[in-house]
Image (cartoon, rainbow, N blue to C red; front, side):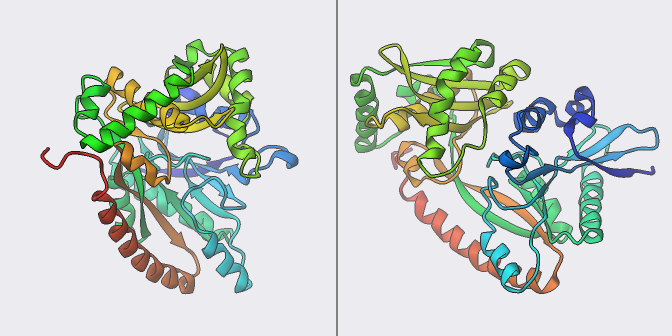
Amino acid sequence: MSLTARFINSVEAVPAEQWNRLTGDEYPFHRHEFLAALENSGCINGQKETQTGWYPFHLLLEDESGTLVGLMPLYQKTNSEGEFVFDFAWANAYHQAGLDYFPKLVAAVPFTPATSQCCFVAPDQNSDDIRATLINAAIQVAGENSISSLHLLFPTETEQTTFTGLGLLSRHDCQYHWHNKDYSDFSHFLGEFSSKKRKNVKRERRKVAEAGISFKVLTGHEMTDALWDEISPLYASTFWRRGRAPYLNPEFFKEISSTLPDSLVVVIGEKDGAAVSTAICFRGKETLYGRYWGCADLYDSLHFETCYYQGIDYCIKEGIKTFEPGTQGEHKIARGFTPTTTWSSHWIADQRFASAIADYLEREGEHIDDYAAALESRVPFRKDL
């Protein structure tokens, strides 16, 4: 079968039903609706004053009849912001050598450190063959256009094995995920904690309740424009406190509420009838992804309740298997999240830098493994389980 690769500068160049036939509903972030909302709202590929360095360059693979048989959501990047797999040192080394690191190609969801597929394959195709063809096409166009590198961020473990077999450099890191052991309720979950850790969680939840804060959990169907206008400043405040503009804007959230409502899970903490905290999450087939949070005031333990305990409660009630609350944060361990390996794959055009980076990744990987092993001793669960 003869296959043709082509690149597009907007997800809107492909009808939603054709795109979603390949991406399915397991990962909400790769659905046509999500990526279109990023483009339509100007969160990516925006005007000069709102440019964030993400420019759609999606890779399509089509058969002789023009039928889509494979795709890789792909971006040309002019910086390393919003990726959460940090290569700032690599870019600096290129600069010091008088070489251009940017633009680079990145297969990832903008601003989203969530494990999901990087390559999508039609059900009637051979997955390994299509993945290999997509990778080779991306590398070829990078070479032809003096693009420094290709980075596939947060792929599944199956994909990572394929990418490594194709000669890409393998990198891994550690996040903290919660796993549902068919808990009947939050108390059942806490019953697996040691006594000291269990008391600490109960105390944190009690402090939030005693502050007069209550919670509601809404889907996109229940979110109105007025509600988004109320909670968007809370989300934005998390970024402004760090001296930077928020990645996403109210227009994005409002569009997603309309086009992908079943995938949205919004936690809102209220005090005296006003929103004081929020956690904006997305729901996949078997995973809840905690993505964005913010608050009006720094109440004791409000972050833990809004971002973690409310999400765990939701997963237990809905029978969701995994909760990925985001990147970093060792404090998650004491609250029932366990160290989990995440992956990325990298192709570097310059073989001198490729060799140096390969050596660095080997040493970094040993450190990550030691770090994750040490964290295992800090999980709050009882030793007799």
